[in-house]
Image 1 (cartoon, rainbow, N blue to C red):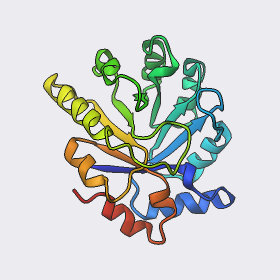
Image 2: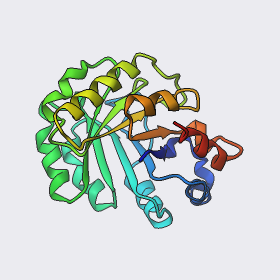
Image 3: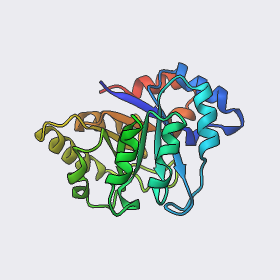
Length: 215
């Protein structure tokens, strides 16, 4: 199966409820929430109030991506706010396991995220410890960036390693995803694609999501 998780960051926040409903009706599988603190990345987005508002209006699972320092202090609150999955960056912690265990104890899917410039092998020890890895194909912090083509090689490595080890770990890809790159990403082994502007800014989100799902 292949899934699309549109990023709320690209929505019109003056009519958030309508935007969420529009994307759900267009066939989105998840709703991706990019939480930024202005410290780990040079941008600030939103936090618990927006997530709680989305939970009231959204029937799709909430796919939470934390771009924050000290994620272990906050992961439980995001779980309690209704997250389907909670992911944080390997670059934000010395040891990912404490935060992973906190999320796991809440019964929420665990996800570990990696930036484009970070050695992909740093994920190796944790591939069997999480439900999902999120491969950033742009530098984390801003929407609307162009896809970094070298991410395809990193994705292939993750797919081959996960399969060789007999793991069930999903791979999510986030950053610059559009109809041009989607078939290549599916072919390389992605399970979920995050698309922000490509979906929320589309005049026809239904057609856009259908196109993104073409292998």
